[in-house]
Length: 97
Image (cartoon, rainbow, N blue to C red; front, side, top):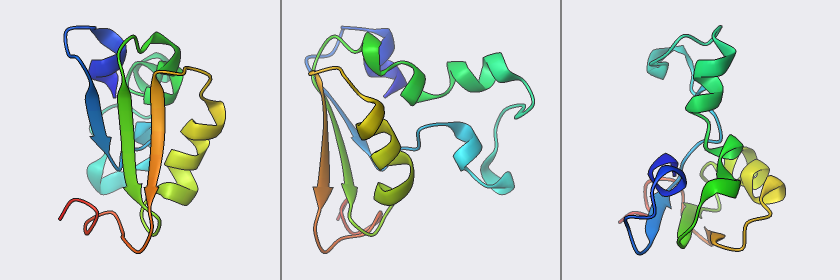
């Protein structure tokens, strides 16, 4: 999602089960300083949805991240280029398969 927000190089971008912010990862997967607000914002797709210039398709299974991060981004989004798709009967992993 951050690639789609930072460049119009690609005709379209697909994001599979992203999180709105790296703080949504638990400690095992944290790859930046969670106390640095600027760094967290720079790595948070929810803060950059307005910058997307080409189609961005966010896809997740209904049993995956949908009720957390994805729903949060969908509710915050006002950019018509960003579309969210919930896939019934799938979770974060089976939607990819």
